[in-house]
Image 1 (tube, protein in one colour):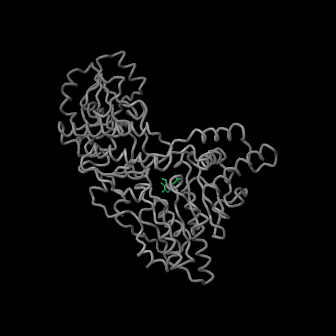
Image 2: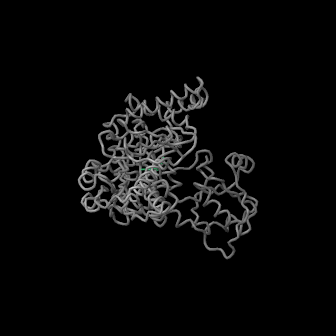
Image 3: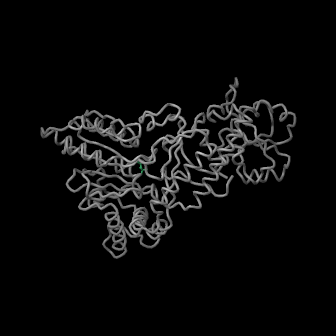
Length: 522
Ligand code: PLP
C-alpha cells in the first residue's frame, strides 16, 4: 500500500484547507461567542459572521440577494423547493394561473427530485414532477424545455454535474425560461460549480442557488442558500430569529468561519491552482488512463465539463473491480455518486445520457481539486499506469476473476448451515502481537489477485499468501491438516475475511481469526 493515499474523490468531499481549519478553531476557541449576544464576545463573533457573508457576496456577486447559511446543499434545496411550493400554493389559492409541472434535470443530484416529491406530497399540491431529458453529452434538451416551460411552475437545473462534471447551459436555460414563462421559479444547484466556474448571480434570473462547504475545502455541515431579491422565501426553521429570521437556530460558527476562509482564499486568488493548470492536470490524468487501460472511454466530452472531473469506463471491467483495484493501489476514486457507492447499480446520470449499458455499469469517477499540486497528479498518474499493468498481469494469469466485480465472486459457497459462528476479530495491534507469538501464522489475503498485486501491506508482506475467497476450497485441507497453526484472513473492509473465517470455522479449524475492518483501517 502506498504511504499516503492519493485522494481523487473531491466531488464526494474534500479535506478542509489549512485556512479553513484555522478559522474553525478560532471560532471554537477564541471567537466563541454567540453572534446573537449583545456583549463584546458576541459582537466579535457577529463580526466574523458578517465578514464570511461579505466575502461570499463578493465571490458570488450576489447583489441584493439574500445569502442564508444552512447545514449544507441538501437543506438549501429543501428550503428553496419548500419556498417555491408554498408560493405556488398561495398563487393557486388566489386563483392566479400557475403551471402544474415541477421540472428537474434528469441528471440532478437525488436531493432535488426527492425534495420535489417530498414537499409536493407534504403540501398536498398534486403537481407533476417531471425529469427534463439530457442529450448524449449530458446537457439539458432545451427544445423539450421550451415545450414544457409554459406549464412549469418550478424549474431545477444544476450548474455542473457531480458525476460527469458536465456544465449546464445556464444562459440557454434562462433564455427559454424568460421567453416562455418569466413567472416560473428557478433553482440552480451550484454545489459542483463553486470555485470552478464564474458565478455572477446578480446577472442571472435564477431565484435560488445552493452551495455546500465540504465540496470546496470547508467542513461538512455548512452550506448556503442564495435567494434572489424579491423571490419567495418561507423559513423552514422557526425559533430565535437568527439569519434575519430566515433560518432559526444558533449559527454553526466554526463552519461559517471556515466557509469564510475559503471565500477569502477564492477572492484573493492565490491559493487555488489557475484554470490552465487544472486543464493540464486533466490532460495528464487522461493520458495515464489511456496508457493504463486499453479501450478506455471518457463518458463526457472534456469541452463541456469542469476540468476537475473525469468519468470513464473500461471495456470488460466493472466499476467495482476498478474501484477495488484503485483502492488497493492507494488511489481513492468512486463509482458514480458517493451516495450510491454501496449499490452495484448503473449510474442514473449516464443512463439519462443514453450511454450503452456497459459504460453505465463500469463507470468510474475521478475528481481532483483546485488545491491539488502537480506532484500529487504525477503520483496519481504513476499509480494509474501501475493499476493498468496489474490488471493485464492478473488477466493473463487469472482470467476469470478480472472481469467480475468482487461482490459477485465473493459469496461463499452455500453451506447447508448458514448460522454465523463467532469469529475472533483482530485489530492491527493484535495481529502484530499474534505474529510475534506465532511467527508461523498463515496470513491469507482473500482479496482478488489484482487487488493483492496492486497493494499489500509492507508490514507483513513476506508472510502473506493470496487466496481469493472463491478459491478457498482448494486450500482448506492443507490448513485443516495443521490445526495448531493459526490462520488470519484479511481483505479490504473485513467483509470477505469474515466470510472466509466462517467457512474454515465450519470445517472445524480451531485457530481462525480475521482482521476487523480490513486494510481500510490500517
Ligand atoms: N448537489 C450536488 C450536485 C452534490 O454533489 C451534493 C453532494 O453530494 C449535494 C447537492 C448535497 O450536498 P450536501 O452534502 O451539502 O447536502
